[in-house]
Structures are given as C-alpha cells and as structure tokens.
Image (cartoon, rainbow, N blue to C red; front, side):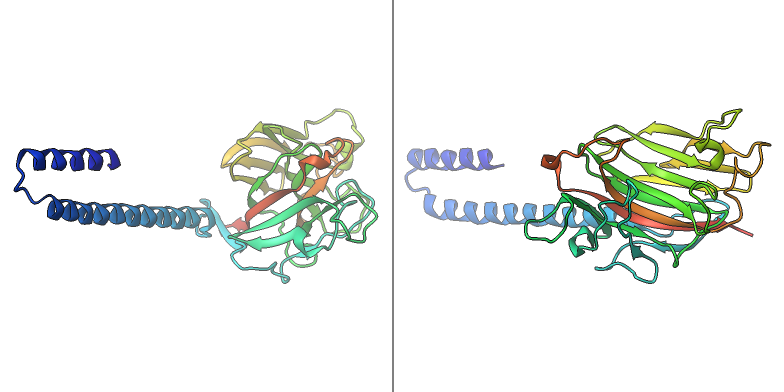
Length: 304
C-alpha cells in the first residue's frame, strides 16, 4: 500500500509538469488525507481482529461447558482469578522425596494470572534464606477436593529444561505405605523430550510380582502448546487419554488387591514443578527459571 502511494505522488508531480495549471497542492493534500484515513482504518480493523482472536482463544481455552458424553462435571477450577482458591488447594510442602525436596512457600513460585496457574522452578533468589540451590512450587487438593471412580481432565503446558520434571498426578487419601493404595500419574514430562508419561503404581507393580503387568506408556506430544491430559478411574480399569485420544489402559487382573487398589477410595490431585532426581537427572541452573501452566482442572462423574 505504501509503495502505491509513493508512485501516485510521483504521477501527480509529472502531471503538474505537463499541465502547469493543474492544482498539485490541493490534490496532494486530499490524497494524504485519504491515505491517512485508510491506514488508520486498517490499523483499527487489525487491532479489532486481534482482540477478537484473543477473546475466541480464551473462550475456547477456558470454556467449562466442554463435557464428555455420559459424564457430568461436578467441580472445576478454571484459574480465572488473581489468586489460588484456598477452598480447593493447598501448597505442597517440603519433605525428603525427590518430587518435593525443593518445594517452597515463596509467593512467586505459584501465581494465578491470565487464566492459568503458574508453578515455577527457579534458582534460589539471591538474599533469600534457604539452604537449597533450587526452589519449586506445587499445589495439592488434599483435604479439600477428591475424586473416586470418575474422570479428571487437566489442560497444561510446560517449559523445558535439563532436570525439569513437571507432573500431574493422583494420590489416595488413606494412611497406608506408598503404592498400597495406588498412585496414578496423569502426566509426567522429563527435560526436553517430545513425549509425556502416564503410569500407575501399586504394590504389585513396584515389587514386580509375577506375572508382570504393563503399568504405563509414553505418548508423543507437542510440548510447545497446551495439551489436555485425562484419566478415567473405573471399577476394573484405569484409562488414560491425551487430547481426547486413548493412550493406555491398566486393567484389573485376578492377582488380588495389590495389583488393582484404585477403585472405591478417594484420590486428590497434585500439581508439581519438580527439579532434579534420579529419573530426570541433574539440574542445569542456566536453564532456569522454568514453569508449568495449568489452564484448568475438571472432575466428572458418570451421568445417572
């Protein structure tokens, strides 16, 4: 458009040389006014289109009406406010396990903004009193929100870094040794891999009793965008999905409760930005900070 305007002005100047009585000044002024109006209109339309596109993307991203046939949504957190809903979540505390050994209550490690909750992994800020080199943020619904024999959808995106291990997983709220009540890993991601892991753990799988049962899978993902990770807890099966596509099913086998301890008791959700460990490897501090973003967490129960 700008090149056309330049050639148009040149044509006017040439015309004026051919016809001296031609009012060049008036025509140039009129042309500039018309051109400026057109450019302003184009910029306004472009801005309106950008705003419209952002609104459409936001509506698609956070619309809680998205349901599954045969299911009814019983609870969700869309993270549309500016702080964590304390009636649904509590901060993960630091203990000695690989996944929580860097957990911190530092405010900036868990942020709600722009329709998502951000969970950060960082180098310990200079001047902050902590003995560890790295700090991470996490949320769990223990004591607040539970699901049993239902479906969970979590839409998430995460950065990549050496030693970064974001995870979305379920634990039973019962006082038993680890894996006795089961563990369901809806999503785990390592470093910069182009795949996500989905796994179940029980006493049977941990102790590798015979006959062995396949207890997980990994599936390719586009790690640069949001993906929806899902699990359905049934009476006799744990069924995993990514973006609505079935990825893996762990079935009850006739090997006793140690093989399938998942049905019947309540599970709570853990959202954790983890750094380091024997599985993911050493952390590269130059890759930090990193974050996992959660767009929503939704619980469904079967329609009656």
